[in-house]
Length: 330
Ligand code: AHM
Ligand code: MG
Image (cartoon, rainbow, N blue to C red; front, side, top):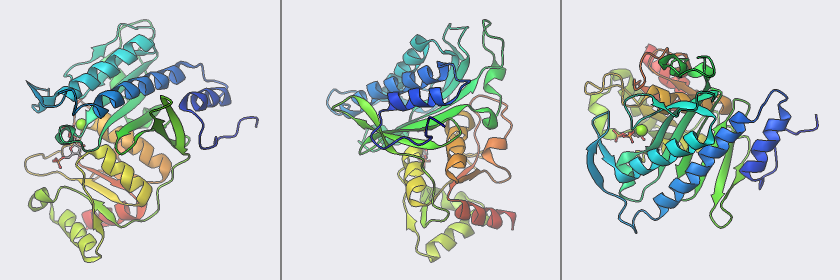
């Protein structure tokens, strides 16, 4: 094969995307362009995030988003940036965003793709200079090209994702994505303005000793979950919880760990959103060898019914998630 599947560390994202496009004879380049558009918006949001403390961008806008949470200025900025990049890029006919109740029509009815996105996740960390992230999920539309995209385009289910990824705005900014073959991480080099391949073909450790959940909710968890967490504590696992899903997931992916956001009486379906938080991370997880489940099934098998639906979410090293499932099954 003239195109090795794994390119060397140091390859730029643009070259990597081009290479992958040529490696697959059927690829027409639209998905490549879409990924470039996301990377471009990611660079712009990187810039905003990194000078947020300087230019009075942080703080609440006094508005609530569709979930009834306070919207932060940077959430809004990120939402606008991604929406613009995906609209101008031309490949996306519609998107849904955590920040918007309804479908956002781009007007590109010839675009082949729809995108579900959480433009800036980790709202409690935005104001305080702690890691935050973008999460995205891409589907090929099922409605006919040339027509207005539909609700059903977004209801295909996690197995139908053609690509998914996240951008972590952490001590470095990183883009991690997959089209289902391998998961690759690109670190942003500010001086070059390029994402550089730094973490090729990421694989999760089979087991780990980090556990991540909001301990303040512990009394609201079901007994099997509490017992599992007690067993982690008995084994003196490390508790690590940032409160930014992307950051918590990324750390656990590289080091070996489990992230839990169970249901509680307050949030009977959990807190996290299926379409633009759980599905994309579950897709990435699967390719790296992690497991992602709720109390009854694999996340990617959940049949979606509405755009902003939630699910309990357990994701991480396969042995850890399997053990948790044994507790849940009893
Ligand atoms: P958000 O979409 O309002 O940012 O909420 C999602 C975030 C996740 O990033 C994080 O894992 C979780 O909420 C933390 O929730 P909690 O503060 O209840 O522990
Ligand atoms: Mg979110």
